[in-house]
Structures are given as structure tokens and as C-alpha cells.
Length: 335
Image (tube, rainbow, N blue to C red; front, top):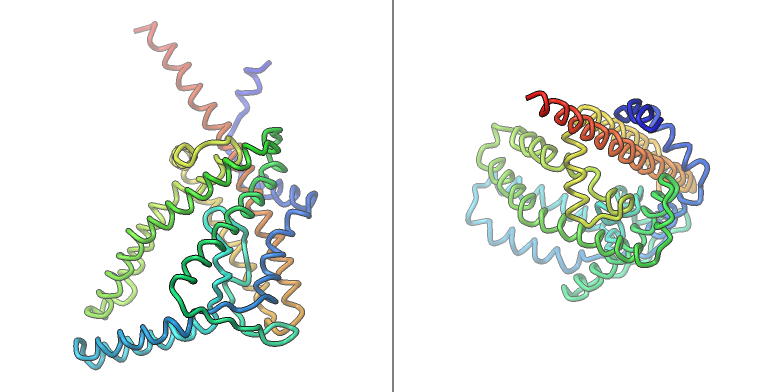
């Protein structure tokens, strides 16, 4: 009877997985309180800025570069500095609470704001790099801890597992999530950041290429990151270590790349497409809270769907491996 059940295992289907994910969160709406709470903090909380510390540094860099570049290049640099100035105007160090890849999704991180429905945000300027790094680290650590609890609760709803309530297991999941975030930061520092500088240099000296270098880099980056899309899931579903979870994610993506790619594409379109709708009201309007609630439900549902996709994908992958072993065992005696 068990063999008959296994013969019916198929790759995860896009629509059923999404429907199951949305139904799971509709049945457990308390899970959306995590992203709602984060966005409310970012909307009504203080604006912790580093503008006064960073702007003089950028101005000095531009001043030193004046003698090195042509007037056309300097015009581009000055335009970039203006955009950077606008970014620092709305950048909030509390954004560090939104961690990757394990973390709580947030609508307000992508928006930035100086005002909310009750008035202007209180502004606190940090004028020391020591305070920036220490505060940023504590905020990131808090985001990972709460994000791990958030992911653990989603996994508990999606996958029946009594070990999810084990305190030792929860601490291990937080530790593995922290290590994965550190690994992602290191990859950014040693790969993405130098590549971005290289692309910027090409754009400055060869402006005729336009956005081609950026597109090429984006394609390469997608190719590198796609196998890691389910890297956090193994930590919360199978209680794996960081490296084991990454390896499992890579095997699953390679085993069923077309289906996984389609799932990723649809998940991104749903999440970011609806974010445009949720971001329509001004941050001065109370309708922003409606957008925050809608974003929380959609984002949490998509994450839940990814857990269902991961679980069914593992079952299918293990079934395929067993089938190949059985075929190999049947062929070897004949030889």
C-alpha cells in the first residue's frame, strides 16, 4: 500500500501550493502580526539617521575627485551625490531590523518616510561610527531572533512537527539563521560590492554601453542566488545546519529548475506587484495602515507557500532518488 502511495508523488504544482499557503495564513491570521508590528514601528517610531556623519565624508570625496575626472564625469558624480543625499535624508537605522534571508518582511523599509499620520517623525542623528556599528549589530541581531521565531511559526503551521516547540531546537535555528545572514553579508562585501564598483567605473568611462553591464551582472547574480532560494527552509523544516540547508536547496532547485523558477517568478510578481498597490496611500494618510495589513498577509502567505513547495519538492526529490536506485539495482543483476 505504501508503494502505491509513493508512485503517485509528483513535483509540486504552482497553483495548489499558492492556494494552500494562502489558506494556511487565513486560518492562522496571528502570524501577520509580526510584519504589521515591524511596519508600525517604522511608521510611528523615531528616525535614526546617519546623515550628518556621512554627508561631509561624501562631500570631501567629491572635492578630492574634482581634479581627477573630466567635467562631464564630475557632473554625473554630483548628480549621484544628490541622489545619495536624498537617500540619507530618509534612511532609518531601524531598517536593520529587516534582515535577510531570515527576517520579517516590511513595506516601510522600501518606502522611507519623514512624516506619518500624526505628524513628523522625531529625528535622532548618530555622529559616531562606533554607535552606528554597535546599534546596527544589535538591531540586526534582534531582527534575526524575531525573524527566526516568525519563520518557525510559519513552518509549524505548514509542517506538522512536534520538535518545533523544542527550546533547544529554537535556539539552534536562531544560531543557524544568524550564520546564514553573516554569510550573505560576506558574499555581498566580497562579490557584489566590488562588482558594483567595477560596473560603475565601466559606466563612467564607457557610457555608450548604457545599462548592458548592469543587466549582465544581474543575470549572473540571479544564476548564483537561485540555488539558495530555499536555503532558510531546511533550518526550520528539517532542523539542518546552515551548510546542509544550502546544499539541500541547491539539489532541489537543480532537480526541478523550471518549476522552481516559475514559482519564484510568480511569488515575486505577487509580492512586489501588490506592494505597488499597498504603497499608493501617502505615509501621512491612515490608509497606510491598510497597506501595511495587506502587505503583511500577502508576504506571509507567499512565505507559507514556499514552505509547502519546499516540503513537497523534497518528497518528490527523495522519491526520484529511490526510483533511480531501484532501477540501478534491477539493471546490475542483468549485467
